[in-house]
Length: 302
Ligand code: NDP
Image: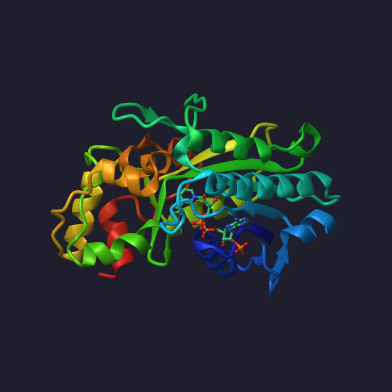
């Protein structure tokens, strides 16, 4: 199968590329920069989608870049980098004389309102309530194919929680303070912490790309990209400390995170959603890392 991956040069894209290549698939990455095995977004806009059986979008300005201050210009980059790339891909799929069989858009669980009690599945109703959930709405709407294209191309949306892996994402920023014994719970620690190992997220995307027998529905199929274990930030912190054999006695107050990251972004860490991968499991996907112990052991290398 030939697969085109927008943002395939990033943390999740590198893992997905490794996995798909190991299964014998051919990958073309869409990037802002030209290079071997890559095409640019401008080339897709002007020349259309290269022939492929699967398309994925993973492009987006990093939301947790600690070097970027939370202001209008950063917020605009977060939105346009996701919405514009998704729209370019969706339009190119719709215009293609040989459209792919599968179109997988990776968004996030920020659409679900943080709560200590409510459990969310892919079937849960949601309406935008803050900056990040409005972003998810606009992003997923940009990926929607017109009805005649949706009959030919199966549309899927995967909503991951925090993606854990050795080579990027949240763990890259957390490992050093935790190694130094400076790690601790964030805010109250009681907030849910939806997470997934990067290998499982790549696995869910690869599983979604596989051809299916039943005809595509005109609406996208949604899959929550989270491990089935429901954990809190406290449980994550203690498990990471145990795996690293380091103390985790320095809680980080919520007000500090609000001031450092901006409160609209700090909600990712200080609040959380209990997200259940109901449809993901029903689709037959088997998690390699269903719980924190197995995931963190693999990441830390013990
Ligand atoms: P990365 O931060 O690694 O970025 C992926 C790619 O996006 C980059 O390699 C880059 O490709 C492209 N990109 C970055 N900035 C821009 C920009 N301003 N405009 C256009 N393209 C840009 O992302 P991840 O691999 O960690 O995540 C993949 C997707 O999953 C993202 O959309 C992210 O929001 C979502 N997600 C990730 C989570 C995580 O914990 N990592 C959690 C939940 C959702 P290039 O330089 O080649 O153009």
